[in-house]
Image (cartoon, rainbow, N blue to C red; front, side):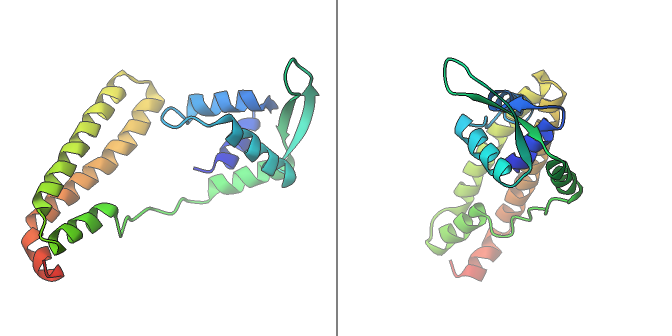
Length: 174
């Protein structure tokens, strides 16, 4: 996820302080990985330097001055271009899991046990996501669906690989 573009998009509804940007980001996108304040302010500094945001006002407080940021026309154009550009699909052509299976075979370890352990971990995570989806709002449901579909594809790969372990062992010399 592009944090800079996400913060710019949040600014399109109106100027905000860094604290408000963090809170909005976490509410809409950061349920599993909230932003750190330092990340917000370093990103805003970069966006300011690149002319994509401007300081709309500064308020003095008990602590440091609070800057209110506003998106510039260049920032709006940048977000529009980012939203229009399709994301590159992640084909996972060389996954860590595949590497582990091949190395297990090459070193005479039990690759079937590795696959069983991974399957159990996937199922555990899927149960948790299914519960979160059941009790969550629409955003949670959509996020969980995305993760569940990927995990289901992984499970299909685990099953297919388990069925082909003998052939794979021959191919890698294990």
